[in-house]
Image (tube, rainbow, N blue to C red; front, top):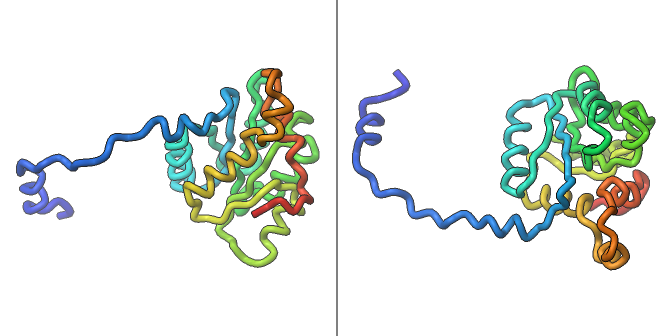
Length: 195
């Protein structure tokens, strides 16, 4: 069958352990994510969710998961007031309610007024001309093409979750500045600041 005797023998042989470099936990700690970051990842493909969750964990982050737009709206609406979501990573093509419709509903306040300016980053396998514009028209803040590259994801999250140098200077003495407040200042679905 699938497990051959050769394979079993190779497992039983004494093998020298792989000489891997130690994990550098300071590499991601250097990013300095705010303590109150809360992400929602929405994708109908469990493998995509698992892969993206692994990338986020490598960056020192994690995300709540939803399988479609309806679940995403429910998760946002049900979030406690003291720990709101900071950003949504939203697949565009899903059953029940796709990402475009979910984004329009979030912007319309269906998930709560506090999320109308929430950064929404589209994740789509469609990298065709016009997709970026369709995402913007639906109220999304930015756009990632699948397959997601870890460095591109890290840069995107940094863009939307970390304060800019100017904001750091302005808010140097204020620790009460929340991510949602900063994000709402950055979120403009009609801006040309997408990469």
